[in-house]
Length: 220
Image 1 (spheres, rainbow, N blue to C red):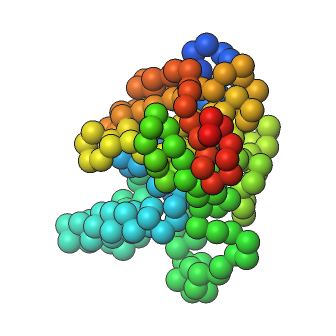
Image 2 (cartoon, rainbow, N blue to C red; image 1 turned 90 degrees about the vertical axis):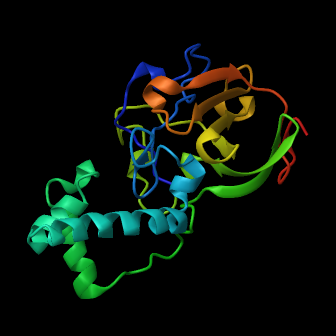
């Protein structure tokens, strides 16, 4: 579920300042897929999905590794090149993890599910039905240091729903906060067109007509 905590651009928050938790984290999930780069055509729901994200990222990393090897690079150089898109890898930590996994295999962690604590729901918004994910940082599974007030510089988003409207190049990521979850006086919705960096491409509006059909929450 991991939500990025090191972006503090004011454009990521509700411009009306209706509640502190109305915050749009641009980096999402175990891969920290960011709207400015590898996550630009992912919703937060897709980026949190460990299976979907791995299916997209593994070939990407392998292709970068092989391209450097085929160009005459060494294996260590090729690994470093394959991981350049992740800032956390630039100090060599990812190579350490690679050798640990190579030598010891992958260890499953009990209690960590596919969405890291996010809950798949059925939502209705503006007359259409969507598969959505309910994201509450307090329910994060596994490493959850980032969810604490001191776990980063940015606010932690209040619980929100995320879903995708449209398909392909015309898709839009929608994050929706019910007033009861955020503490704002109204529901609030933030949207980002695929291909757009959230730091400068968010559209914020007062929300209405949203129903969590799974739990009967909202305007049902």
